[in-house]
Structures are given as structure tokens and as C-alpha cells.
Length: 173
Image (cartoon, rainbow, N blue to C red; front, side):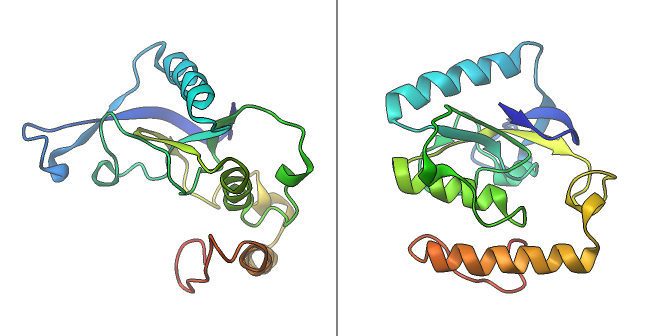
């Protein structure tokens, strides 16, 4: 289990009065013991699906979450909260720097396993990105970090064109 130090709390999406209306969904703080439940469920699901990587929902916006849903298709496993079954395989080693290590990790696991698990029911609230005292911003200027991220994007698209494409202006590029 890997969790960044800026994770403040873990939440579960709760359906509103009309479960079909996603705008009515709200977040509720995960109950005591809930994290352990998620970890045990992830381990069970990984062993039955062949997945070796899982994460919570990328967004903490309830509109982009789904109660009781765990997806198995290709999609980003966030870097601030994820878990895996460790395998010491060279093809899983990260090679393209810290600019987008979560994208690289996700694609490497998906390419090898054909599945990653994403818990769309749960999310982590973190302090705003790139504003913490630690992390990449502690060792790089804003300009250096942007250059590292752009370099990572180019390298990842070059290595994984079947999974990734450039989208200038998007959050991940």
C-alpha cells in the first residue's frame, strides 16, 4: 500500500435520494476499519482477476464516482493512494522520471496484466496538488517540473502509443 503524506482523509460516495441522479451524490468519511476492508477486498479481487495494481477513484468529486463499482479496464491508478502485489519484474520498473510516475506505473501493470482495479466508490482528499512543501516541488523549480513532466509525456507516448496519446492543455498533457 502506498499513500502520499498529503492524503488527509478517505471518503465513500453516497447515493442521494434518487440513485439515478448522480448530482445528488455526496461524500461521507470512511468508517473506522474501512481502509482495512478495502485492502482485503483489493487483495481478493487481484487474486481472482489477475490484477496486481489497484487504486481509489482519481477524483474526489462525487459526480465522477460510482457507488459499489470497481472497474477493471485501463484507466489511471492515481499516485497518491494505490496498492499492488509486488513482483520483481524488470518490465514493471519505472524508467521515465517522476513527471508522471502514476501514469507509467498504471500502463506498465495494465500492459503486463491486462487489468487494473479502480475503486470508483472511494476517494482520498489531499492537499492541493503542487502546493505542498515536499514532493517534486521541493527539489525542482516550477519550470523544471514542467519540463520533467513534458519529457515524461513524450517518453511514455513513445513507448506506449497503443494506450496513450498527447492532449495538450489537459491535466496530464
